[in-house]
Image 1 (cartoon, rainbow, N blue to C red):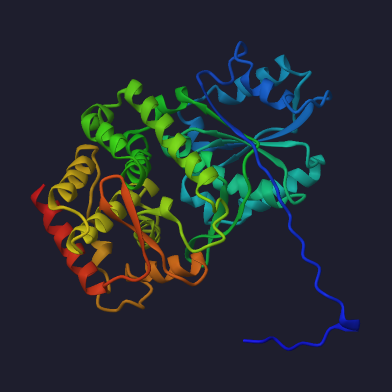
Image 2: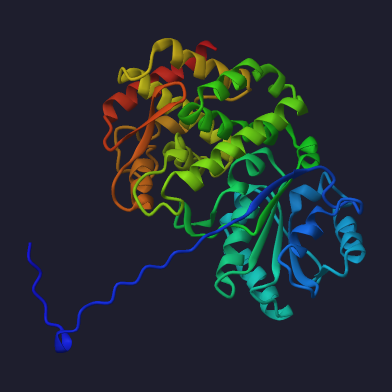
Amino acid sequence: MAIKQKTALNLQPINQCVRVTFNYDVHFTRGLFELDNSLLAQVIAGNGETTPKRVLVVVDGGVLNYQSGLLKKLALYAQHYADVLTLSGEPIIVPGGEAVKNDSRFIEQIHQRIDAVGLCRHSYVLAIGGGAVLDMAGYAAATAHRGIRLLRVPTTVLGQNDSGVGVKNGINAFGKKNFLGTFMPPYAVLNDFDFITSLDDRDWRSGIAEAVKVALIKDADFFNFIMTYADRLANRDMEIMEKLIYRCSQLHLQHIAGGGDPFEMGSSRPLDFGHWAAHKLEHLTNYSLRHGEAVAIGIALDTTYSYLTGQLLQSEWQRVLVTLKKLGFTLYVPALTEQLDRPDHSNCIFRGLTEFREHLGGKLTITLLEGIGQGIEVNQVNLSLYKDAISLLEDWELLH
């Protein structure tokens, strides 16, 4: 269709193209804050600036329950490397889990401290904690001065292999997961494997769901690895877990860098396989489900639906569900069947599809499976068949 418009003095529009390149490293270490581990200091000093950089620390309060000496270690570390960094006041301690993303006061607290101590865009926010705390602190850092450098120190499996290594930050609002947020890559990610040794079993297991997710849509060999070592993972084998975290991080980063849409300008989010239901389940259960626990259910549901559509073999469907069960996940919760005959009801799981579509930009695009390691994108679904998938999943869970 021809566009008719009036232009001032026949002036033509100016076309502007802005190209921005982001580079950041994901490091793997142990004893990050031990005085003989100079990694953090090297990362900060690596920018070539000679004056000590100011660092505001945000700490997940849940971590302190298991790492009681962490704050003292931080202070001693800053003293030891005083020529590189200086702490801007006492660390800000915030609650862990989704509670920190459901209350905007924690964003305000960080913003107020940044303002009070006079941090600049060449200063750092050092966020230590689980994925939710990193999401919140990252959002605060990205929106102060239009972006303060963010150093992430993920302390959970989920943070180290998935949310902590990517480019997203956000908080929940209006009853929706990550309604407010930014795309802002971190300055660096520092994975310290010592943190995950003190996780409780739920948090240890929760992050494995994201590895299952990326394996199912991208790497059949990786899924076979998880399936083979599921019992050892469930029994907290650190050697196997380190390999899982590394490979999952690698696949995640490869997708962000090579997938062609790192900031999700389009309507495709293959790395969110299983997440349309997971995000809704978290809300419906008042976040009593860990994110990874909800993702495991979402994976099981979308895998079952893929099987019922004929895209996935029955043997492949069984392999996925059996592996998730061996890892210790529950694959059905009653919230899946609430208001199931009223798709537009706020408590119906199918509202998750609508919210997912809105989050993407108006067009529904979800990832299903056409084989282990082979994701496929679809733009419409059969709700009746999804109801059958929920029923089948409930029956399967009862039998196993």
